[in-house]
Image (cartoon, protein in one colour):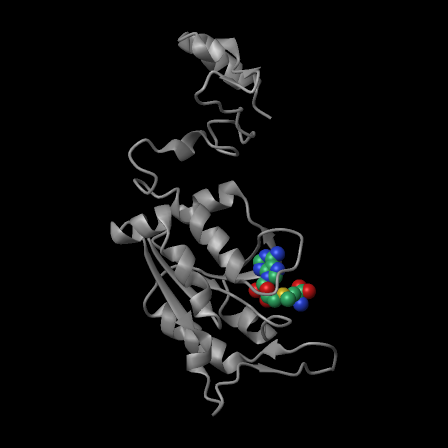
Length: 214
Ligand code: SAM
């Protein structure tokens, strides 16, 4: 799956994309990730990407020209939907991540300032997603959240075991939250692991886990 991310802070992604599972997925060509600097598309001689809002008010608004040129360029490379990160969007959920993971591509647009000129929303954005009812300074963290949660659902990204099939909110767990986990030692600072998990009785363990979903 191909991810293209449009941002004015491309360096914000460097560290995360170079760590752990996401890095391995990129190295193993299970996903491709391209970061596009919206500022480099600006025709303004100072590469400005924001301006004052018509009608007045606090804050700046991302101007349409750099966004238009950046997104139309990306759309020639990636067939996937253009998704704008915004607290005003539909709430991002595990089932949404599952649906997105079936696509061949995804284009994520990160806003900054008060957000983007509404004409871009009307013309180039296919859907809008929020990662929660709070306001971030920009869409970069939201894009990373979506990239991470979608990428780990792509076959082989987590390894052959596909452990995500039994994660919280998965269909297999009836969209419930996962049961508690324990590992060695069997007793730690006086607290013991539930006896049934040491029993080797697979049916009893499965029942215990089912009864401990939240
Ligand atoms: N003025 C906007 C509002 O009140 O809805 C908030 C703008 S916010 C300061 C700047 C950018 O951060 C947004 O354009 C969006 O891209 C991103 N952002 C902030 N909160 C977000 C959230 N909960 N989910 C997704 N993106 C978010």
